[in-house]
Image 1 (cartoon, rainbow, N blue to C red):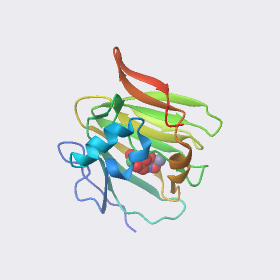
Image 2: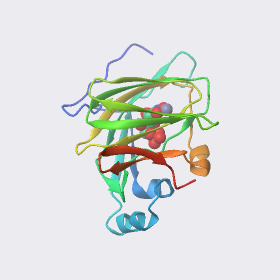
Image 3: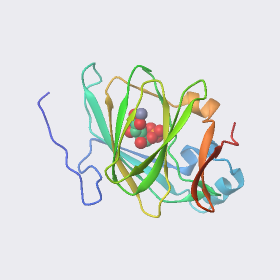
Length: 185
Ligand code: PAN
Ligand code: ZN
């Protein structure tokens, strides 16, 4: 494969991606604490929460996969719109998140419940250590757009999160985004 370029549009989203994944509330209903609000949103048309636009690279050692994610602003009860979240299947793999626009929080945690939160806003570069599950929240009023770069062999383990959940979550508090214990656990 030869070196290649991808471009982003005025919103920072990858133009001409090789693959697009759209996630709606129904794709991650169990992630949210307020299940009554989830039902309301499903009845109101099942809104899109985020879109991932991916470049295709071979899944072999040495290759780097990359994609842009665009998260819509929104709340489910007092919990911000979030990504499904995952561990990498290969838990020796790290990842870089570069925020292009909007504002949010990246929540990361390990299997022994160590957790940390990092602010995402235009220009922030986050390094996610190997072995840390990660999930992002859009805490602003605009789309949150970011680029993620990770080893093409990393793989995504969503099951562990669906079964165990994260120990914490991010809600809209009186003084802004607040990290609280996750009632889904
Ligand atoms: C990101 C995420 C993306 C969507 O590219 O895959 O933001 O989140 P979910 O994959 O949890 O639905 C990444 O971390 N890749 O490894
Ligand atoms: Zn990842």
